[in-house]
Image (cartoon, rainbow, N blue to C red; front, side):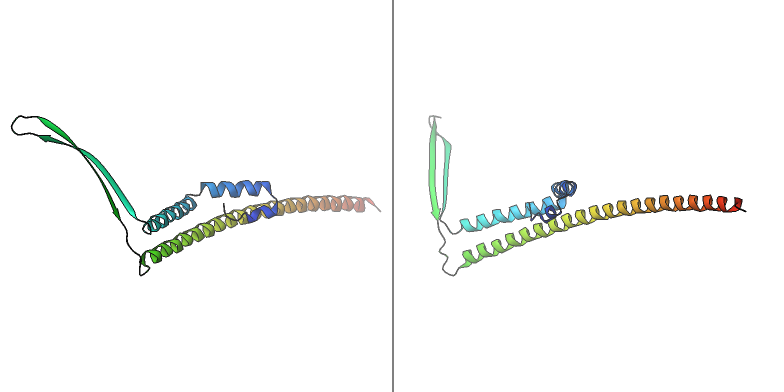
Length: 161
């Protein structure tokens, strides 16, 4: 997971929400898969720095024409090739793919940061709205108490000569 900055709030509900959001976000999962694929390309490009060895084996049937007998022939082979990287073409290709992989990693991290920030922002907006609602309800209760006091005072004032 990317930097878990939201843990500094020490809010277990926020931790749970962000973890769930990061795990279930398909776009983020796609970014991670692009990064993994780019790492595979780096490995493939690095393999060109080493000799390539190919082996093969096969069986062939050879039918004789005169006596209709069958002969089995086992064929095996080994081939090796190597490209000298005199001008650095292969090394440059490896480095380019490393930069591409790094770019995908930064894309993933940026997407994760954006998602976690959006979740945290929404969570604290919700908490703020709840607190504002509590304050409004307290104010309504206070106002109702004041109205009761005023009505009681007006009743007392009317009956005093």
